[in-house]
Image (tube, rainbow over all chains, first blue to last red; front, top):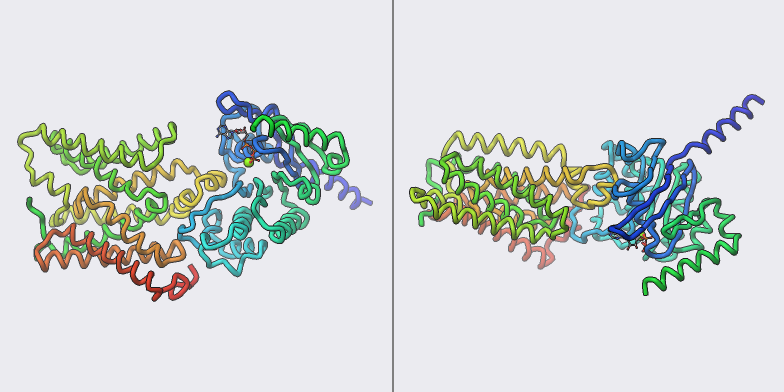
Length: 254
Length: 279
Ligand SMILES: Nc1ncnc2c1ncn2[C@@H]1O[C@H](COP(=O)(O)OP(=O)(O)OP(=O)(O)O)[C@@H](O)[C@H]1O
Ligand SMILES: [Mg+2]
């Protein structure tokens, strides 16, 4: 009885640990609003899919969260601490950027690429991270010799090497074939369910988000939906609104 | 013009400082080459030349003034570059031309300046002073130690500025560090190969090594081997045939590069062949 109660409280506690807390985030690029008054949070174990058309501000949001873009209004907190105060949180965050560019001639093996970002110098952690993305057999190949999809997997491993609490992935599956996408989804799913790593992931692919994510944030300058994935995908109004804004964006740009 | 060949008495001094300089230049140069900043050494050297001329002009020991001038102007330009988004090859050109321009004016303004002094800096000279050798060894040791302790971060910011930043590395500090290190390296090596040939030592051994090596560590090792071989054989050729030392060193380094191209091109050595060990 006591144990059940304890578990109940514990579960409550776990669910209320906010990993990221964003309040009233706005970004201006010299007069052009990229993000307007965004507020949402990411709890432990969340798998949050961020959807939005080109230019919606997804990368901008990530760049702010990672301290790459510092000209913003509002507050971003990681682990209950304002990221303007300390950059320590970054060691708990794994980041896979949108289209990482790899110089084909860069003389570094995959193993070396992973140990670059490693805080400790424990070679076992590098091997473990590579194993999680099934890349350990290629560990001594030159990074530039890999295919784009393989490189993407290396970058996920790189994001995992410091055992992060949260993974930030900016459109990681663009340009990756169906087989590798499925592999990739499987990897992400396992990380999220088995290792309880929170994931925030941006994508244009509504189907993929519906399949994987348990939360959805719909972004287009403003955040016009944030909540449980099922609610979004069962709400025809919402879906219609989403496709309309996407259309509007396209008309703006062409 | 008086070019200096290596004399018999100076061989030990020249060899010791030459080896230290080669190790240093190939290590620092590798980061510059990987940052597509190959000519940065040249640019630093040219602006250092401005500093040398200034030092000679006001009669203060010119090398350390040159060092300060080179580093400060490079740091200043890097700041400007970040702010106004100017490309790095343009920065190199600006630094190079401005430094040389300032130097030429200063030289033309001073009457009692010996042309020989200037030539020494432009084309390098044989190092004979024991004090000088000790300074070179100490500086080279210090810089190599700094590189040893920071190479991971330096490499990461070289590999991907964005990702390095996102993992909490202060990428800007790393580039300032690299610029400072490169500035001191240029000043040390200038005595040996001169302003005009400095980037050869920065670039040639590294590009040759990158033809073969797969890992960063291999590249570094191989490049150091190439650089030391080029310097040592250059020094002996200079002594043997009584020709300019700096030119000999650079030409041997170029020969190694061409040889590497031929070997690589003929398929005798594959990148995945003899060097296919763990990094
Ligand atoms: N460095 C910048 N300077 C000026 N404007 C920018 C900059 N980066 C982004 N923007 C603008 O901010 C808006 C949001 O861009 P962002 O890259 O965040 O969109 P995104 O949702 O990631 O798009 P995509 O799906 O194409 O990756 C766009 O209108 C873009 O033009
Ligand atoms: Mg984007």
